[in-house]
Length: 392
Image (cartoon, rainbow, N blue to C red; front, side, top):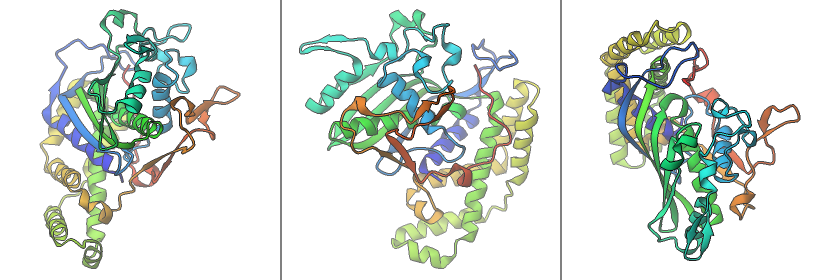
């Protein structure tokens, strides 16, 4: 388990509880069968990740962290807007016959602007400030350029980056207009946390804090049973773990008497609810496989779930873990770590973790500059029944 798991679940619980659906509106996104992909959403989701504690990679389901970092490098290192330079298929649907996605992402990064001391593109100017003027308060990169929107295959989702240096630590505030929470809720956090690690290493800083703000954080209708499955499954895992922990283990690991008392109160609170999550998990998994007939059916299902005692208890467990990081060691967090090649001193010398083999297949790049330790979603994650559908 990772601390990012509980940040993620807290956000998805909030979205489900809000029940703000867009079913009365015309939406752009569609499912593979052509039907509209409606969603439930919240306005203004804010989460904070401390990179000194862990690399914020969720273990709820396997995240292609290599693909996430490769896409980030495609934008900020290669400064490309052509999918032939990308080692995944995530942008295929937005590209033209030449592979271009228009004046989006990398095309905006590489455009140069005039400064008193010369011309720089956006990322090179950020690096200049980090090395020469780290106290500067305008270390901003912006990809949502209105005069070029008509030339973009898709408007940028992550569009603004604000960098800050405090006490030798590099912090980043991410501005994102929209986020498909199941598919990309952790993806964007992973790739921009990696960017902080990279810039910190080449600029003589330490990775600090990432703050992630999303204006419209949403869950598509067909994704709701997957979210329910992960929420109840993780709550059940914690519930079982609490039952297995003996008092002597608490005594051994909890040296702080205040923390020990808090943990004992938390365990007592959870244990007094006789809740079996298995039936709710089975119901969600059945819907994952067979799907409901329309958006209204998913809306009805989500409303029914959030009103149940099981959901209230699951939320209490998840939020209790989110609010008490001091319980991490006792419940066995794995705390993923991102390891960079320490020999890289220049931003443009980082090597992508993915590549294309001689057959054009995307594979791990053994010469890549990135490794992740303490990450085991196969062991710690939730076993989803089918592949998550993607709204396009």
